Length: 448
Ligand code: SF4
Ligand code: SF4
Image (cartoon, rainbow, N blue to C red):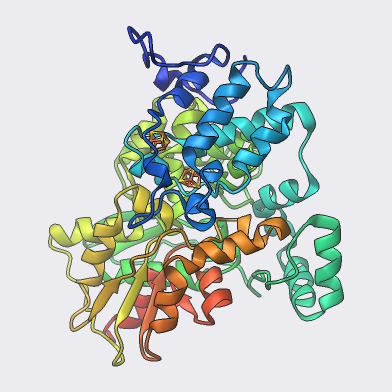
């Protein structure tokens, strides 16, 4: 079986183990599936994130293990010659939100997000890509050309119920929640900004910060410059085929199984960041799923050793600040207002062990009282919560922990969430505006 992703990392799995249960077809991909040891930790309640689809349904059919079982059946030929289009596999994968909790919390580190990406790529190859998937995947490219028309269309759709119903009927976009409108202006700063007393930093501005929340990227520049860094904005390489188009990590393509397009975006990013990587300049990102995709999924795109070199230079905003705080960075941050700060971590921040850096960053604010919300997945999970058939599941996932905690927050409390999807889910499900950490810190900066 020809795979779309590089599964060579699983090459040695199962060697010498007659009971490893590796499916007959699929090579190293089958080995990645077979790492599950069927101890059903993914069918438990309690703390952590795994597995949100089991936690809302209480049905083992929607657990990580059931997904593994379906893939084993498919790769053992039980679903026929075209297993990736089989309805049983689709049913098993239907509620997987790609939260990566299994990669962190499953004792065998089953990487269902990557397994799902390969599955979607195989399914796309055999059966084509839906219009909705193409729209979600191609959003960064659409925004770079049509941001304002998309803004007007989204605002009209949000205010005119017949348009929302039409979008549900034709595209499968739920009419039961507003869509986030692109901003009236995109992030346009090019830098460099700042004295550079503490060195150079390259800011990677993702599609969501650039086109939906430019204030976040501007706030990050302000905070980093206040810390004494010289901040440049990552730009496409001079020899890029589309030098005017903003960089994008390719995450939206990957989440729809469009691996070829994701690889092309990843190559652009690697070429653009090459000089920073070679110089050892820290590269800071803002959106957890984008930055962590560059550190994680890029490895599976077969892009060579540069990915590892880039990974060593990549930091999520809080990670960078926490690291620098240990090296003597002092930011003039003071708590504003009387309320507490309640921070919700994106699933991928939890999966990569980055909640500590959120705590350390919040501790840099003099006089701040803060708490990390004991939440699982917010339930929005990229496009999942906008899909008509997944709206209810998305809402229920939010109710596991996050929404009750946000509703219980006092009016003066501030909710922090770095994930674009998480902020939208919080606004829609609990009627509260959540802010990115960069905005919180900018507002906490003492006047110069
Ligand atoms: S997926 Fe992980 S947690 Fe679930 S049964 Fe398999 S090994 Fe256990
Ligand atoms: S990625 Fe999340 S939803 Fe999917 S199987 Fe893993 S824990 Fe469950």
